[in-house]
Length: 91
Image 1 (cartoon, rainbow, N blue to C red):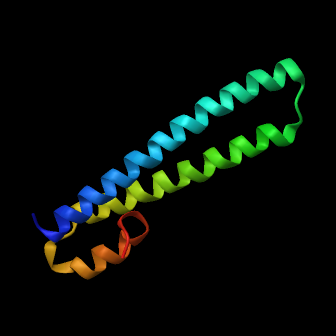
Image 2 (cartoon, rainbow, N blue to C red):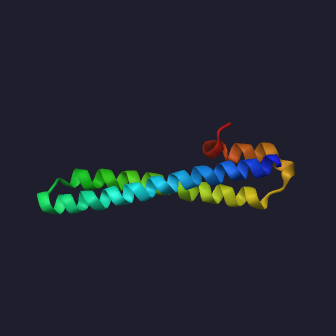
C-alpha cells in the first residue's frame, strides 16, 4: 500500500469517526430540544448543542475537501499530502 493510499485510508477513518460524532450530537440536540420544550430550558442549552454540532460539521467539511485534494494529487507530493492531512491522520 502506498503512502498516499495509507493517508487516504486514515483520513477516511477519521472523517467517519467525526460523522458518527455529528450523528450523535444531532440525536443529543434533538433530545435536548424535546426536553427544552417540555421544561422550557434556557437558550444556552440549545445553543451549546448547536455550537458543538457546527464545530464537528466544519471539521467534516474541511476534512472532505482536503481528502478530495489528496485523492486528485500524485504520489510525488507525499510531504505536501501529509501536511494537508495532518489534522486528520496525525503527523
